[in-house]
Image 1: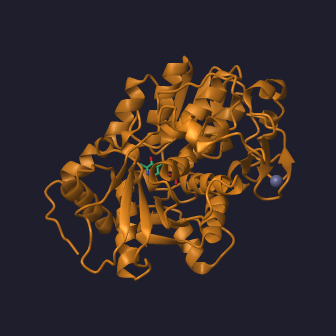
Image 2: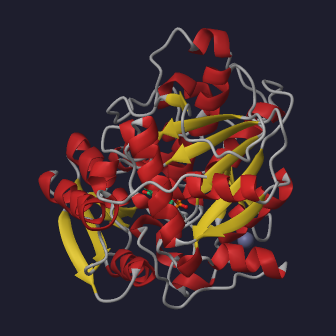
Length: 420
Ligand SMILES: *Cc1c(COP(=O)(O)O)cnc(C)c1O
Ligand SMILES: [Zn+2]
């Protein structure tokens, strides 16, 4: 893959022996570009043959049963048999997941046909975003492979989450942040949990390049990279799909997800597909990815019908968690949306702010700007007649309002509500 140049070779050969105890029997990793499969290796984060992204392949059979799982705590590890971590490994966990699925009551537009709309409120995770679902898996692996710590580039939430889970595991946490581009609540969390913060000039995409350099400079052994090109982290995030099915008791028609690096939408789709392949559900939802108009590489690629990413050089949006111009997981996400019969759409910053205010003032659900993109996207689908009567829609509300207090105070709080 273009992003990281030639240097990943050093990392790929490490720790093969350790991997046997960590991963579930029968788990493989597969290149999404050339299709080659490999035995699981925590340090192999890109395909050694073609540098494509890797994806975890679960065993073809499972002993998982929803009835038995429901006797466990409602959290990521309820679905343990569906995760690639061996049953003998003790997770580094803060009881993440188990987030509320909240039906919208008042936030409906007049033109809307009868649909049921739910918000999956990921703001109620331990550090306030869905990133915790990935970090519980990623940091569990890190703790078992003899590294000193973890390293992430982040628009903020990944840093907050990595910092908390690393603290719990007794590992160092290095976070690389775009200078001036991270919301206050997220920096505060990273500091509080004791992360080592490095700021770089430029945007998130530059910070990610920096992490790569750091990992290579350190020979790949000291700091384990936990960005969303790490396929193991996404395995935790696929539990969003499991919880939706678990709680609704059926599969929704449409799932709407704010898209930045595009790991989450890929992970959620993978979760649904795995339930389907195990015969645990009998239909699949359409996946809708929402991007901010000024940071919409995937929506642009989608509109052009292109099969190569249309990168955005200088991404701009108030929704800092999705201010990303070169989404690492673009190929996975493009395939997910295509396969599911869904689409990508864009929303303006103004539409995001209106949706954020609506969720908060009409429903009592406080989210950060990126998260409100899912409601803004839903409203756009309704206005364009792209949702049928009788459909069930789930909006992923990715992060908590307190993450970005400055935007609330300066742009949202006093806003008069514009309905319909
Ligand atoms: C990380 C994040 C996103 C984007 O998720 P991707 O997996 O990068 O597409 C959206 N909203 C919030 C609040 C996030 O923290
Ligand atoms: Zn490959």
